[in-house]
Image 1: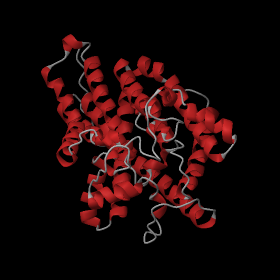
Image 2 (image 1 turned 135 degrees about the horizontal axis):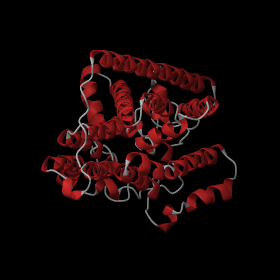
Image 3 (image 1 turned 90 degrees about the vertical axis):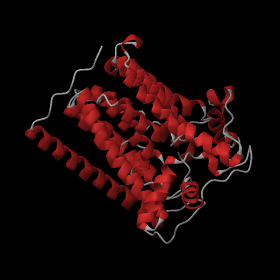
Length: 390
């Protein structure tokens, strides 16, 4: 089974699409300005927890540089180091984002500013690509609601300038699937290589591309030779392992450090069933951190519950991708910490959620967006004040 060719757009349609693009960028800029203001006000006027790396010479964007920013900063500036298994090391962080930051820093002459710009550029690209993909799969109204759900998602502050790799990973993942839907499997593989070179969970992008490529052809028998281009997506992952082997004689150095004190990622039954999450509630009860962890658990449950709808409305290939891109971090998080942002690449979930909400009464949609927006602003202020929440 082959995919129908999209008819050429008329001049009016192109003009209409450009207006949508401008509006998306304007909306993104407005949300960015609001979150930047909220973060700065909170950082300067509310109590701040113990601080790690500081960049006081960046008075406006410093609130975007927290926690793992220090790792990305030092990789971009000084490269990788590895001290052996069980010790924290830079090898835990994949190279796509710090490499992009380093290249950008050659132009702007400032690594923190470069990190902010890479995040902003990648997030804008991701939103424009997501709008096109959702519009093609559903309709324009659903596409707009999808963008609103993404921009106001409680943990979307990682897409609004934070010096973290999330925005680039999301952008490269969406780009890969958009290109595949445009019947450009080789270019899809190239975009996917950026994703697999950005995080270990990037392998979910490779698996998802293979699944969607098979789905588009109606099964394995319909697959064409050119569809094998999606396999190029594995290059990013393989290249990083080859580098670690060459540099440290340890191709699994990214995994060997996960058991280090402070990270404590030992995959096992206790981690899978989230024993630490229950212990936190037993030992500490209602606390700010426990509430945020519970929010991340709730969002994970909602995303999992939407997988059947993803299968029904988008096909089994996208369901495979969603299960993989959510399942890998779920299996390696002992208490749901960071799951809020790890759900960001599960873009089919956002689109399907929008398709379910778009025909609901306006009050439903407004309520969901309002609650999400309030949570987003609140979590942004906590992030700016050095709370480790995701």
